[in-house]
View 1: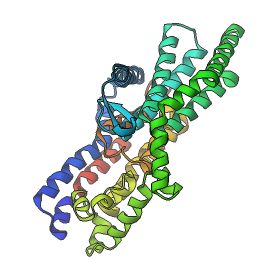
View 2: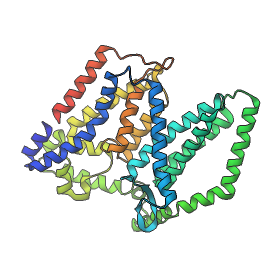
View 3: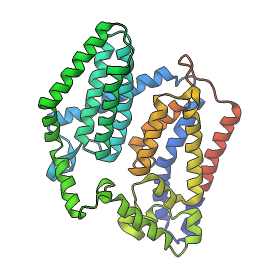
View 4: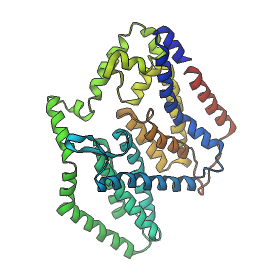
Length: 366
């Protein structure tokens, strides 16, 4: 409905409507998949989800590392060999996926270290190391910094905060961690710097290109796109309609060029769907945040939800991306669990009807 109104007011051709519908399908899957999983909540239990994420993690990690070791695949910046993405399509989407995966693998590793040490511990350790290695290969600033942050938190927690089954376990952990730190200081840091040399070259190039503008450099020019996109949005001759009903997506790309895509999800949603669509988006996200932050439902999935929302706000490629949005959808469902003895407490029927009503409104306005 909203796209039809846009086509009438903005005089868009039918090709704009069909193109925007393609964007809408990817956009609303993040809301529909959790609802679908809720309808089949007896099948999608929390233990099953944990195993599913582990299997996905294995395939994604192997799918990036194996092509790299074989010397095949593509780079985002081929000239400087920066931003390796194997046979995946988008570097930003891939970085978001591995931010989620390294958080989960770090959490699993922490739990395995506190329990009985079995083969699962070795798998968790290798998986975590593989996730961090993949973030370095991808070479995104946010991904590398987040991986380093998670590793630092995990290291401090493992050394000082964890409760181990015996003194021998704690002593072994201290010896291993000291060995890793020594290896990192002697050789590991040099290897990591060598792998990131292409990324450093790109940062240096853009730093001089932007005349030392750190905001533009750190935001990958999104600050410039936002300024130009906001100016174009506010100066639209149909502003009184587009403020509430948006401009659509194909219209913005054709009218404003590169300024029509900010790559910051909340601003792109506002410019595309207007105030009405933005309110519905915030209501849906607020609903899941409420579930995630309730005392009984707080978990690692709650933390991931907050991280991904921040990532979508500043770096984009979450709500409108098929890859990272798929992870986001599954985690929205995970956040709807109220964990008690690894069983889910059902939503009451009023909340189910409320969620279905919100979804109906979203599709009605689209």
